[in-house]
Image (cartoon, rainbow, N blue to C red; front, side, top):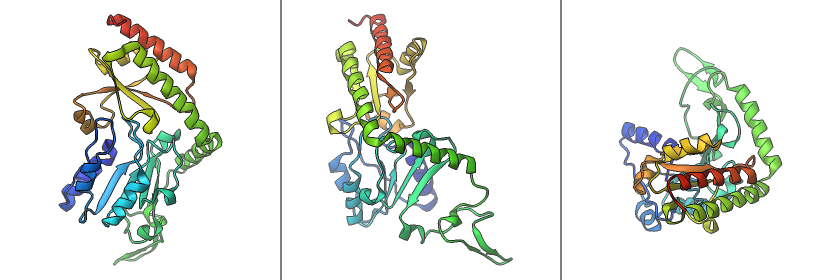
Length: 292
């Protein structure tokens, strides 16, 4: 269920170092397959990298349990929190992972900057991955010595403006409160889910687990006989914007036998009027394609 950003880099590393890369399958309901996980997360696994929340399915993975399982077999855990950061609180101690990352623009900040947290004991063992100014203690002709982490990983001129804006975005989310946002967004998701089902009936397929099992932030669906790109164009004419395509998750698209899906995304800035506009526009689409 991974976004390409947590897949393509590992393909590059595996090709460069001769590693074997494997994948855990996904159930029909959009959750990690327990049987497949048992067979693949075993002794000899070096790194277990997975998403907290699927950007397509809205699935919330049970991170503490998965991280504990990885520790049992001696694997490091890296968590992609890009999709969860704007919806769920991130307590790295409670999650139990070794590293966690998310991008700034997913949490209402700017592009070109993000957050990487690494367990201190692990961070201290890592060498610099790039060189430049501000990360050194001393440079001679023969060698250089480096500052302590994290400074030795911050070569060159930092994105100061981006960091300031990202800090403001994080303050904004903290001010709103995750509980308050979750209550608001889940209400909108439930309303959209029920409204779509009433409009399209058996012609509608919604992907991902039911809300009762944890479904956060997004609602991905297909409408029989209507390509997602065409649906997006029709809704755009009604002033409604949604995402259509493979959502940087082509392996997941293949798992469900589709080339693209339509996706509605919710944040604290959305309201009931947005849902009304969306469902009214979807009603027009259904009538256009002669659905009752």
